[in-house]
Length: 114
Image (cartoon, rainbow, N blue to C red):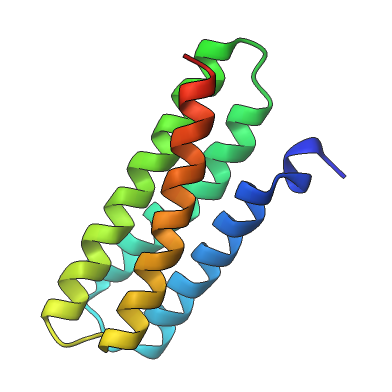
C-alpha cells in the first residue's frame, strides 16, 4: 500500500468522486456537464496522490491547492445542477457537506506547508 492510500483526505476524496459519478450515471445531463464534473472530481484524489509523492513542500502544496480548486469546481457544478432541478435538496446538501469537509482538510494541509 502506498502512503497516500492511508490518508483520510485521500479516502474521502475517492468517496466524493464515486458520489459524483453516481450523479453522472443517474441523471440525464449534458455531455459537457458529465465531462466537467467527472474530470474535476477525479482530479481531487489524483492530485492528493501526486502531491503526496513530491519531496518539496512547495510542490506538495501546489498539488493540494490544485486538488482544492478542482473541488471548488465540483461545488460550482453541483450548485448549478441543483438550480436547474437536476439534483434534489437532500442530494445537494450531502455533496456540499462532503465537499466542505474535504475543503477544510485540504486547506489545513496547504497552510501546514506554507
